Image 1 (cartoon, rainbow, N blue to C red):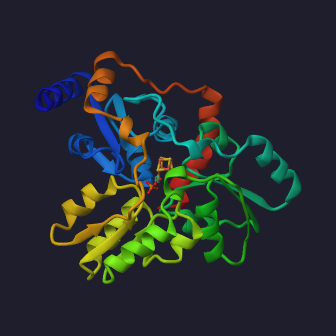
Image 2: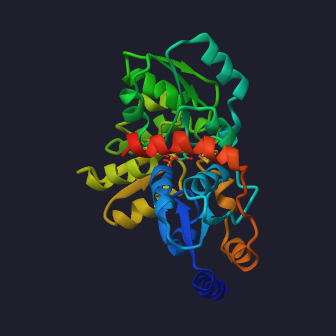
Length: 303
Ligand code: 13P
Ligand code: SF4
């Protein structure tokens, strides 16, 4: 059954001149058939260069929206339109406008895990792989960092010469990855290095040997002389980690480390959207233009 679906997908990809992009958090079987797999920053960069007519985006809605905004002439299809990131909605335009009035020299820095509407009211987007670099490079003294409080706090601790104002958004999945579960895992694997995504809470970040984006975690483990690692992020990353490091060991912690929305993407749904053209990302023209500017700035400053 699996093989039949895969061969049908391959056939339709050729017929429709389509390409499949997938985030590291989707199921292994999706990562195996994708043309490009990566973290949010890599996928945004790839999206700008796609020559094919159709992009099937295996991820959550903010990723598909960014691909559409960055390459508006392509048809972007989401295999499951309900796959969304709750954090992408955890900031408000009203609060952004209030901050702009309150602070003179303010840049609104928007984590790419955000709706197109939030992006359109921001000055620059960042991902977890370039947030530090981009915030450091901004001329502004005051930064309103939306929507993720944890990533914002992590950046504010590194960039001391700026006034970074935090917003109270968070990733419900990374928030559940708690210090106690990590401490237990450290007791069991005392020689393992701890790899943590910056969406985790402050107390968990303090226990990390390495903090970085999904791709950053993969690169760190691949280049490290250590042979075992405790991975504190979504477990989809384990597929690429293990593929690249067959001789190394990777452990998870005892709490749930799965993003249910990323797991909504299935082979059947990919086949279905290729067959019917369903799940197309359609955004208002003006919104696309306004949200393009902060994304373009991210590509320029974050490279
Ligand atoms: P990356 O920037 O590592 O791709 O993270 C995306 C994400 O959704 C993390 O939860
Ligand atoms: Fe959003 Fe968290 Fe899922 Fe990433 S893991 S897509 S931040 S809910």
